[in-house]
Image 1 (cartoon, one colour):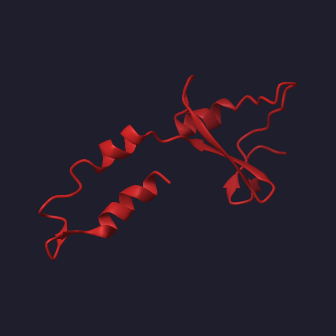
Image 2 (tube, one colour):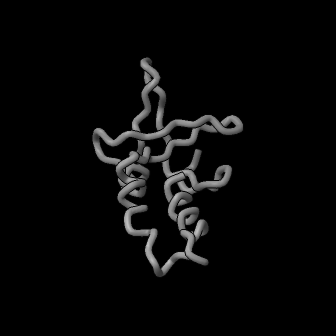
Length: 93
């Protein structure tokens, strides 16, 4: 597959080979664009005949991002604005 060719909903950023143990090496450009460093966990999904990898998000990452989102400023009618929480949650989905 040529590098840079549009595939599915994303853009191909390289090509690799599955080794005898089922492992693949992600191209440097892909690792860099996703902030993947040695030891970083990823989520592997199968979607419509494609393999999708994305960085795993820890509970601590979500809690750190949500911390402080419930303030007097973003409350609607005395309640937390669910759209604000949804916006933050979507960043981690």
